[in-house]
Length: 125
Image 1 (tube, rainbow, N blue to C red):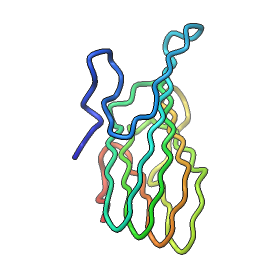
Image 2: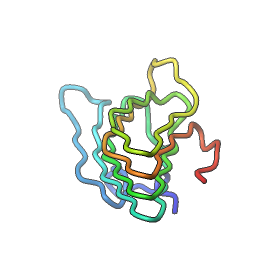
Image 3: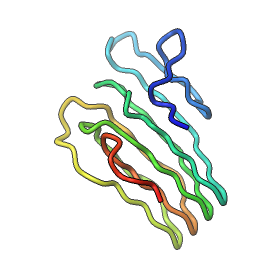
Image 4: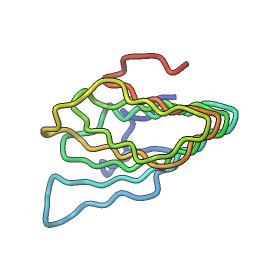
């Protein structure tokens, strides 16, 4: 399933596993989202291509013998802070770091993989 284009009535992302959305009154265009994604012997696909500039997303992604694919906008800055045990984490493509959304990926991969694709390009398998 693809979740990036689906939004709740109040403008927040309608993602399964969405823990919280925070809007800061001091900075009108800055929105923080936090999502937990877990894959055990299966696959999870997160389509975040609808993130707007200035939004910040934190993903806690845990994969045990599973796959997690994350699709981000072309200009997104991706920060991978997670750990790997006999698995793989890969961010495809680069961003210039100016003006796009910021996606931080944390969590642990054991015998699985997490792949981040830009602009919907690439296949998760």
